[in-house]
Length: 229
Image (cartoon, rainbow, N blue to C red; front, side):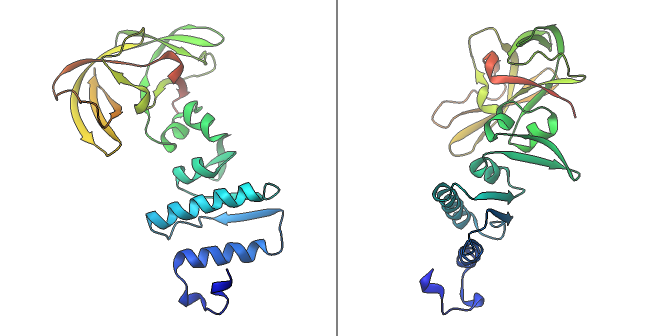
């Protein structure tokens, strides 16, 4: 920071201003640091660099509690140890980044943290740690949730958890309607009955042709049941 001592704020870039502001806040060694969308005005490369700096800062100052306010789910997942998801001024869900992403409690949380296939199902058998459900005539197994307390259940499967021409018990007949190359992955769209499925395949894998009839599958432990709220 010594290089910035003689400069006015107007002489600093956006990233430099953010670094100086954080350094000034930390100079008094506070127990809590509040950051309210500190990266929102920065471009993507600079934002990514400062995100890594914030992670490194917190690792060096483990006694410092950082309250980080953001609308960017990527920032929340990358930085947070615990996340509180707000809705209409109230906490709608809370937990670890992995927990909120992999096993959200309801539609709002599932859709906030990335893409999710949310499919209407009927619970056929509910046990203490698993459930048998039906979707478009297919019988599917979901591990880790019974569905007992869910009034309007949805099956939640992330696009990367789905595969095409998969083997196993959870298999859904579908037809390919779109393929989009997205760099690291290919986003495949398939229709099962009246419902659209989003499937992420590795970029190097050959995608099925549009119009092809396929079987889409997923492992029971890679899905969960959420409330339609």
